[in-house]
Image (cartoon, rainbow, N blue to C red; front, side, top):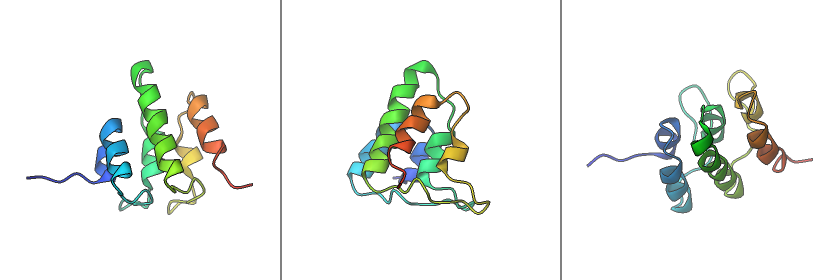
Length: 100
C-alpha cells in the first residue's frame, strides 16, 4: 500500500486529497528538498478555469490551518513569488493572511 504526503498530493494537483490530508492533521508547513513549502507548491500550479476554485479552496485551507505565507524558500522567495501572473484571485487570498 502506498502512502501520499501532502506535498506529493499538491504537486500532482490533487486539491481535494490535499484538503483531506490537511483536515486530517498533515503538516501544512512541510517543505521539499528545494525548501518550497506546500503553500508555495500550491501557488505555483497552473490551473484551468474548472480547477481554479479547488486550488483556491486548498490554499485557503492551508492558510486557515497555519501555513505561513511569509515563509521563504532557499532563494528568499515567498508564496507570492510563486503565484502565476494571471492568478490575481490567488494573490488576493494570500494577501488576506499576510501579517501586517
